[in-house]
View 1 (cartoon, rainbow over the protein chains, first blue to last red):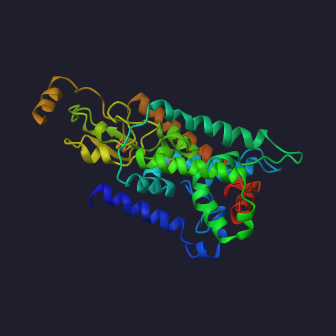
View 2: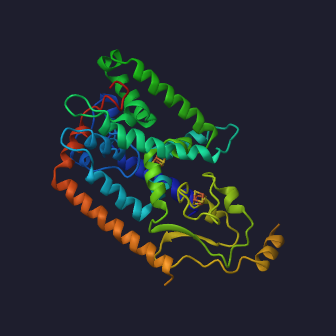
Length: 296
Length: 50
Ligand code: SF4
Ligand code: SF4
């Protein structure tokens, strides 16, 4: 089976499992069973009526902002374990909001690349809105707000805000400035995702920032066989995350989608769980250039 | 085994052990109840009302 088809099927299966309570969209109720004590490895609002699991970014802020705790060992430990094992493979294959963005990108339109500088914004969002504000901006009872959910998260607005306000007139009546702000962010994000592949993942997602940092050491990783690589550049040209896998196989932006490996004419790119040493860069000289010329 | 690869494996093991200890500690002090409680009630902040 082609890698792209396999990936799409796994993304759909992951979306289906983590949002299996579809009938709740009609009733406007939330699933309240035991699964909600576990975190989804991807971004999936827990106020989405269909959601089976808890959102890790929401859960991290909720625990840190609660009266009893300032830090969530449970959620951070979970993300650390998942990130060390899989890195941003989660983004490429499992995350429901990643799949949704890819569907928006399928809308026919001119497509653009994003200047690299914008990819650093998500680290600022992680530190300020997810880590600092929920602990630092507390009320008289010592409770903080989940600032990322409150002011930014378009996934929450799309899968929580819209279905909940549609089914609950009392919630609809309570909408105001914050709802307007979040709707504006949602509309701008959706529009940007039509023109730029996974705009939210690249620029805003704090979960992508965490997994991106862990991509550098994750057990599931990408490596390039320098003996086979002829430096034709097809991999970098194919990558919609704007990564050059030959130069930076452990890039924080690589979502391990495998498109580059499928495009490589020499099968020099491999993705998988490996503890063996990465291929040594010894043979990238005259031979490779000759091969590249032959292929052109 | 190359030294840089050895270091990578050591870091992976250290992080995985730290992750397991954190999960055990967090579970032991009752964080799961806080997560569940937040996840089964409508989060006003998430839906844009909080
Ligand atoms: S960056 Fe965030 S939204 Fe995008 S796929 Fe990764 S976890 Fe999901
Ligand atoms: S470098 Fe390859 S695996 Fe990584 S995002 Fe780009 S195309 Fe996908």
